[in-house]
Image (cartoon, rainbow, N blue to C red; front, side):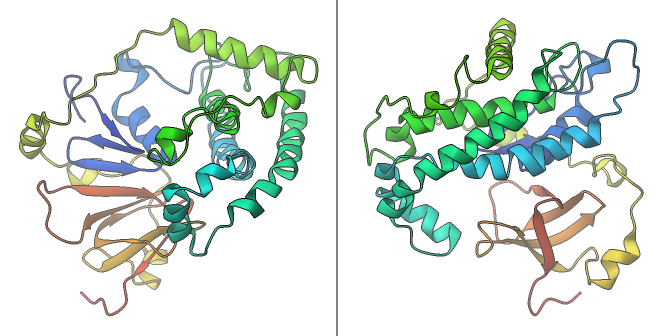
Length: 314
């Protein structure tokens, strides 16, 4: 287990714990909870309930984050991106990732429908806040609150045009148009409104432990090279007992070359590498090609497709 003086490094949606790189928020959360447990003084997104010792909602909350906020809700908020962004180099890049050309004017025409879809999500969510402050009745915010908040905060900001200059690489200018306010306001959804601002107040009260490393500082690479890889028994996050025969039927055994890609967008841009370990929730590979630092990349199996690469054999 990584010691406390080797905290995780988070880079652009990847979380590095030593030379183990974790991909996708769903797996990053579980890795952080496992390697930096609350029992050792670290924070947690699975806080205690009043009068309940076990976190019985963990599976439900993970499903809420993965199957609701990260998929249909995210599609609704993404549909509010201003057309000027799609007309920039960002739009070209996303078209390559998605696999087909994107029409800025057509996407702009869909914004009212996406705003209506967001209103539907908010209507369903409002019923959650008729009693308690948080999504799940915990003492402090949980993963459910984190996942919901960042989708709404991002949707509000991106629809307004905040940060689109940076998102588009300078291809368009920031604006300040209150698009989401038409459906998300205190009068229409008072429970959600109260929760949203309570969450922001909670986050503002936390101590900021973030450390930024200048791009010119490359000493972290030397530190990584000296960091040992995880042992075989500690490589996977705790989950159900492995069922090796299921994967073996698909040819997914250590040493074979595999490709891993999201099951939605980005399917034509897989990561290819040598399979090191595979479990119920997680697959670990050594990426193909030479690198400055020898690393292993961990992907969740939920939301990703892993298969034997064409022509691969042990």
